[in-house]
Image 1 (spheres, rainbow, N blue to C red):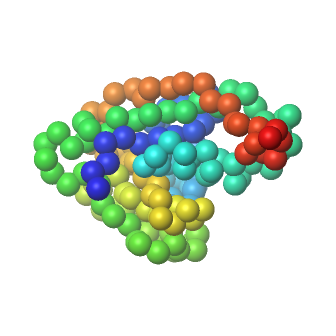
Image 2: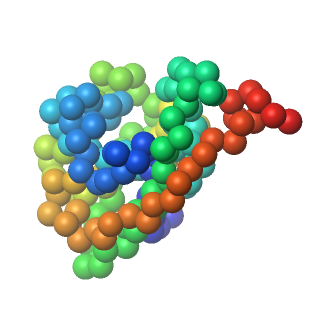
Length: 156
């Protein structure tokens, strides 16, 4: 399947492609100190990825979330390989970080496709913002996002 876009859900202050949050704190597929931007192949998956980590009652969830659509077609303009497939199976965090860090070290592609832990049949995309091809990306399309109350156990 050809990926043409990636999706990210973030607080408005972090709605960029810098990878700074992942660099500071690490993530499932990168160690602290390594920049990476976590995207998903479809718009629904980042909602689940954020919800699984939210530990707040609905009334305390910040109202500044935005959904970002990142056009990835500029990465493929020269026809070369720009996305690499990671392991097909979910890995524990230590192994997944080692896999992601090794991918960053190789620097062959700007995108690594990995399985979601929440929905293994769906894929997350790691973007290496330091890869030379990442400079081709245009700013993402950003829109305000509000969680449907039914996702939070409220409403009918």
